[in-house]
Amino acid sequence: MDDIADAYGSPSMPVEDILGTTVSPDDPDRLIIEPWAKTVHGSILDVGAGTGRWTGHLTQLGYDVTGLEPAERLVTLARQTHPAARFWVGSIADLTGTSQRWAGILAWYSVIHMGPEELQSSVATLRNALTDDGTLLLSFFTGARLEPFDHPVATAYRWPLADITQALAAAGLDVIAQHPSLISPHAYVIAQASSSIVG
Image (tube, rainbow, N blue to C red):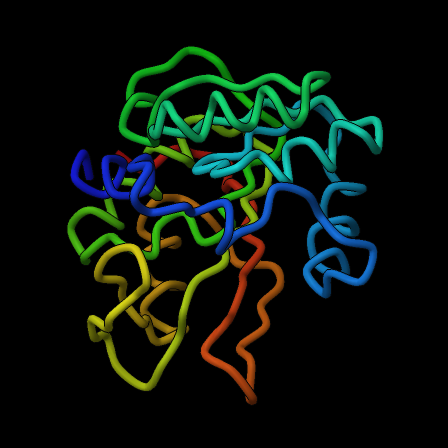
């Protein structure tokens, strides 16, 4: 994953031109992320925050949000663009063993470059960072089978929805909402932490 962070942080790969730095009024993802944020009773962690667009947007809406992003260049950009928001340099792996807990974790296309072993470890780490009634909003690329594909930044993966659900269950997360898109390879799930943490 260090290579992925380097790719996103490279000046030769202007990720901000791909992702944007702010959330536009007509961004369709607002219809997913904003209603979820309203259900979170406590602080939110935006993992893989990228340019900080969602951290900044949710902060502007009044939520207690921290952005976590491994690419230092993007964190610098995010802090410049969204000075009212909080950002840390770090990855999901850096949350391993943390004693801090969040009521909600946003992982918006944050695990798309992970193969099966990395993804399972990452969702377990995210579960451990949630409060026992907390929720995870996870978006990803979906398909009929698990397979890699060319992404503008680095190789990414398509996942069957059932495989994602299984990985979440193994980590101690119960899927409470899901949306597999019928017209594009994009999907999301909302999963709630079960009463016990799965190691």
